[in-house]
Length: 167
Image (cartoon, rainbow, N blue to C red; front, side):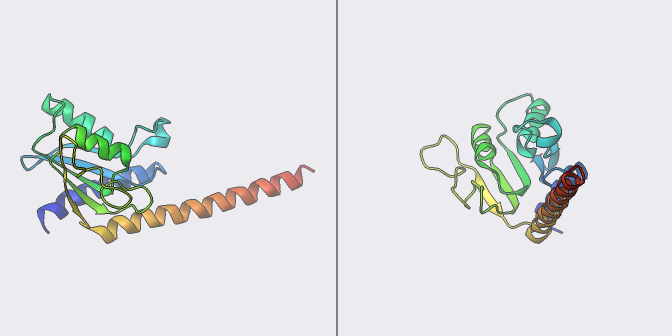
């Protein structure tokens, strides 16, 4: 197992914590000098807060750990390609590199929809490595959304049945 795979495995463990809360399973770790300094997972629904993305939570924890808002020398491992908000945070916090499990063709901003991490003119560029444990990351997300669609159909059917019974 490579070093990148080892850290991505920990990001996947974090994503599974989100899954246990019925959150979109996205996990993240931040590494500095060969050690994990922050771990986080998606908690948007749990916290009723759109800012509770795995990446932003991990960044806050890493800043507390390092005592600085600059995260130079850090690498973020994340199971899904960052959205525009998180990609912007990676640039603003000066993270050196992001290692991505699977890409996000609908909202990813590390090359799928747009590449905010390497936009010329910004004061910082973030190196991108993608496809680390891609299959495992993608299958977890695909399975989650498949189950979510089934659950929503069942809930809708239950509501229809309940409405018919009340008539």
